Amino acid sequence: MNSPPAILNKILPYSVVDGPGNRLVLFFQGCNFTCATCHNPYTIGVCDHCGDCITACHAGALKMVANKVVFNPELCDQCDACLEACPISSSPMTTTYSIEQVLEIIRTHLPFLSGITVSGGEATLHLKFVKELFETIKTMEEFGDLTCFIDTNGHLGEKAWTSLLPVTDGVMLDIKAFGTGVHQGLTGQNNQKTLLSAEIVNRAGKLHELRYLLVPGKNDMQSEIKRLIDFTLALNPDIRVRLNAFQHHGVRGAALDWPTMGEERTREIAAQLTRAGIKNVIVPAIFQ
Image (cartoon, rainbow, N blue to C red):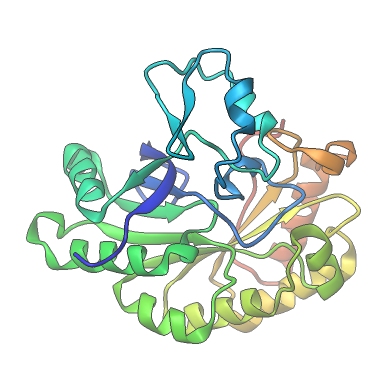
């Protein structure tokens, strides 16, 4: 196998919220967005081995070896002080995996799985690894029933999608906002690739879900909701649209002072989408 190893923040053996059925989820480290509302901001950066985290670790689980920060999970007590100390929103508590190592983990849990989902951070930053992993799963008889899904911000070009979609079964794509300025303010990037990605993936018949995080006073105004409606209807009114409600869990920085999105307003917007003809609108099961 030719892909270089990938840095993973976490592997979740079982999840029922990251695609259909019971899924093993790979959370890749590193993201090309810097979302103010991110609930796991420690997955944004990639460790540059500055060492700031080492002095913050009271358990001695981190040390510098050959100018690299090395993590010992056996000593870690999950206090997360290292995450708070990191100046680039990264985590030293990551593990580098080869394709073969990931496949072995999948084998361990295979009897209980419907498929795997790659997430992050942003999984498509690791395009070669993800493509080879999906290709291998598709060509090995033992994995024949597994589906391969991508959870993504969609900041990916058409050529890359053309390469990846033939081995992908479904895509869950986040749209943060439709106004260019609003999207830039929320994520640090424009939304041209994201919106084009939704169209590309939909044309391929693999857009499993659009996700829209409602942030009060930022992207829940009528102009944004109308564009969400128009965009979804132009794609396919049967597409699943998941409305997520902004909360403070895990958030850092200025967004901690932003109001959270309540249940009543979220359900009002969901009802508006339904009245407009969008047939499959989902709201959070829990608001907190």
